[in-house]
Amino acid sequence: MTRPRISARISAISESATLAVDAKAKAMKAAGRPVIGFGAGEPDFPTPDYIVEAAVEACRNPRFHKYTPAGGLPELKQAIADKTLRDSGYQVDAAQVLVTNGGKQAVYEAFATLLDPGDEVLVVAPYWTTYPEAIKLAGGVQVDVVTDETTGYLASVEQLEAARTERTKALLFVSPSNPTGAVYSPEQVEAIGRWAVEHELWVVTDEIYEHLTYGDATFASIATAVPELGDRVVVLNGVAKTYAMTGWRVGWLIGPKDVVKAATNLQSHATSNVSNVAQAAALAAVSGDLSAAAKMREAFDRRRQTMVRMLNEIPGVLCPEPKGAFYAYPSVKELLGRDFGGRRPETSTELAELILEEAEVALVPGEAFGTPGYFRLSYALGDEDLVEGVSRVAKFLGQVG
Image (cartoon, rainbow, N blue to C red; front, side, top):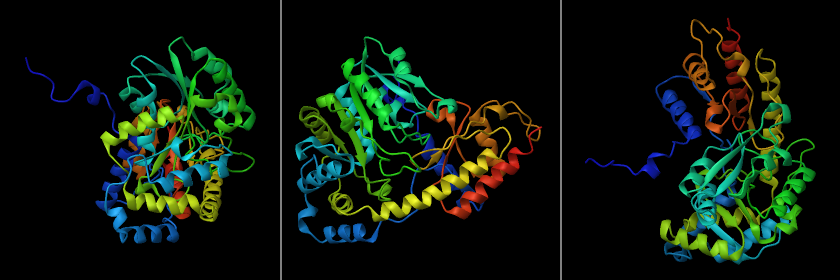
């Protein structure tokens, strides 16, 4: 009997759709095509100079040429605890912090530490592409709570309760959201948190976009809003989005000490410590002020308004105003099945492929986020490229037959 070369567990993992779209766009650009990519969730700003200088100094420090504790530099763990209190009012100590190789490792380690095979996790859809794979690898079962543009992609307590079963162990809570930019109000956050307390559920909350909210929207940490969650909440975060540090790969997990100790044990065998140079850069970032983040947020807000206005001017496209992060998530359901120069895309994936081929614009289809019939567009790119890219999409979609 011939055995499969790749394990069933790993064979079941899908490639990151957002990174795949970004890679294809970059390959087309390298081949000389003027592709504009809306795929990657990555600030188009450089990492602030003072953070880079901290990394340069760390390179010269022999201490950082050696192994350091698997759970993170002690001074960085303390700085993350201090930053968490400053930014969200949530008080923890350094022993409750695990420094990870980016936010994705924090996501995986949280679920790997909490879930046994068959445990269910409630996940609001649309959702970021990595969540399903992390839950699956941990042996968990994802239960989707589907939202749409009519509610601004916000889930209600009633929807969550309808999805809960005896096997539900955790709720994944994300605000601001990738891919929709949805932001729950403080009142909604509190209501959901109290529902989780009532049913003794764990809450895993991803707060990576905490500093990117717009207009009258405000970030509220569920851990702070509902202290009664106590030791059943795990907070995920990192430096990638706030400080334009996607390539530095530093995230963290905050939780009860027993969870953090167990996740640290896992990390000690998976990767050991995060790069010391990157940790030194992250220390400078979280210890500094938020002035650089404020400047980026101002630019993102301007681009957000431009993108939403332009998308909503396209017949058949409906785009709610995102309140946070740097993504728009328009519905294109009305355009599916229509004729575009003799081709009739039946799915948002097919329509995205057609737009990439014909208009040379890279979008991520809603299938990647659990809700077909939508696109995700990042507005973390230059103003001129943004206008040119959406204009190309509008021109192409205007050919609908």
